[in-house]
Amino acid sequence: MTSNSLVTLHDVRVLQCAPDGPPLDGEQAALDLIGDAFGQEATVVAVPVERVADEFFRLRSGVAGAVMQKFVNYRLRLAIIGDVSGHVSQSTALRDFLRETNQGGHIWFLPDEEELAAKLRPTG
Image (tube, rainbow, N blue to C red; front, side, top):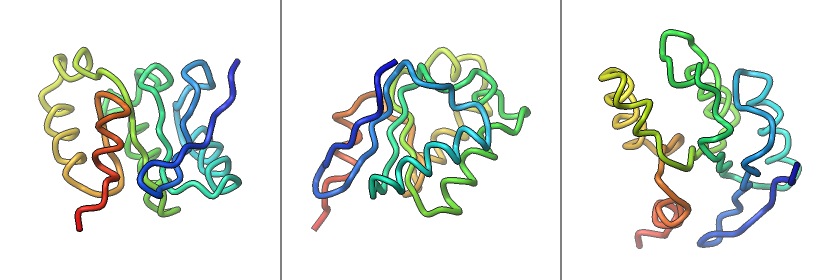
């Protein structure tokens, strides 16, 4: 298993999670990532979609809400990086949820690291 790494994008410290780490599957997994981010003074956690549990994308499971709430409570931004089209194609509610979430400033579902860099680019 490779470890998470810290990168800086536009003066923002980002904890880039390794694709083969433990799954993001609930509150404890979120707290583990939050602790790692705080330990490295990161303000954004980028998690590859491969690490996100399938339950996360089933909104009725409550996993997405619980995970996202932890990040908001601790004032950390979460970016899920990768192709979520397979999950979105199965659920109109999920598609609407992701679109709405991406309009905010805390949780993003982005296709790649370049999009994350664009999100973090200063607008002034």
